[in-house]
Length: 394
Image (cartoon, rainbow, N blue to C red; front, side):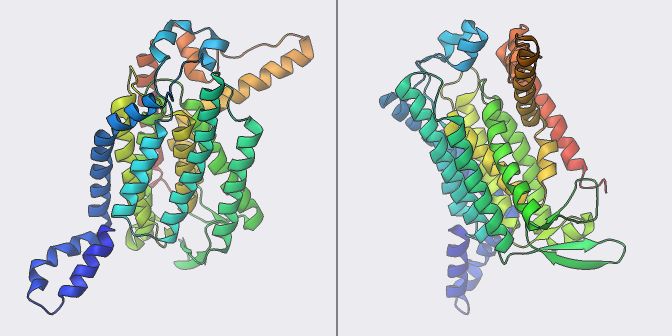
């Protein structure tokens, strides 16, 4: 909105005495300014709306009075008194601030609209899951199969839409100094490999689907301790602030030999808004949490990261930067797989970890909740640095 308003005022003042006075509005053409403005706006809006949203959630009794999975399955009862009565669905605050800030500071391009609308769909799915848990007063929300159907349906729609989307990316062949154009699905870029890999439409759509669904569920699994998923999302999003800006800038992308995606620069504004919204929410979500994001926020945030990664040809950068999310998801798959295998072979299911996701394993080993969160932050920063370094390792 600010961009369009500034351009309207500049066009209106052209050739008049107001032209010099309004010339500063040209700054709104710069993505860096609008990204900074989006981050600050999202942070301030979160601080302002946070207490009101928390009070609203308490008024409608959207709070956790039931035993969560960590308490019922892992016997982590020592923290039960701290968690009970805390409002859930705090993800509404993140998504509200994110979409409002993006609408104010970004150009409403196809990529921005697609990302924002997809986040709203995943928010609605998470809201239904949280509402079911509150209504039943247990940790069983929407059946997992139903959530996967909705997630894959959305992800496949995005993949097919991107395959047929007229927006293109420009991929450079280093030795020949030539440039080829491609859609956002059929070509894959690997983090340390400078040549585009053609994978075709079918594999491309499947990769898009698994990236979005995997990222959404990985962040959801990470959301088990105060501030853990929020802080890790913030760190990973900073990586994509850099990548979206590089991919959206024709000269920088050429120098660093990454795909130039037309319109990707506006995703920098979206990612900056997500950083600000995450920081603002973390203010209320840090230990001891005043509000939980719930599936309302975790499914949406994970999906947003997956969609952005897909839109700039960098799904494997997300795997590196989101190493903590990957570890959380893999720990659950290994735990369930090994338990089922050993129960089939020996009649008794065995476990690899004391409890999965892996952050609960360390809780069971005696680490305090804040210790787990801070140490996972450190690991997430390390993964983020490695992901950023791939811009030069080609």
